[in-house]
Figure 1: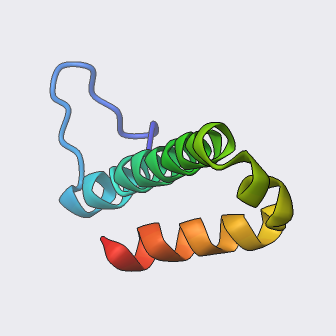
Figure 2: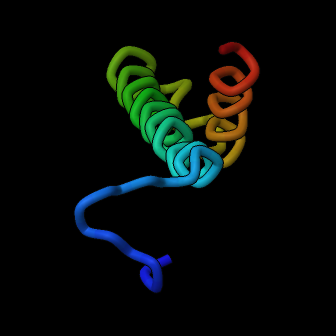
Amino acid sequence: MIINWNPIQLDFNPLFILISSIPLPMQLKISATITIGLALSRNLAVFFPGWFRKIEQSYYAEIVLAIIFFGT
C-alpha cells in the first residue's frame, strides 16, 4: 500500500474503506450492550435484592444478551 504512495493525492480503494469501517458500529453495539446489561444488573440489585441474589450471574448475562441482541 505504501509502495506507490503519493502524498499529494490520496485515492483509496472503496472496498478497503468499506471493510475497514465495519468494526466501529459493531464495537459501539457491543459496548452499548455491555453497558445496558450492567445498568440492568445494578437496578435489579437495588430494587429487588432478594431476587438478585438468587439468580445465577451467568444465567442473567445470557438472558440480557439474548434480549438485547435478538430484540434490536
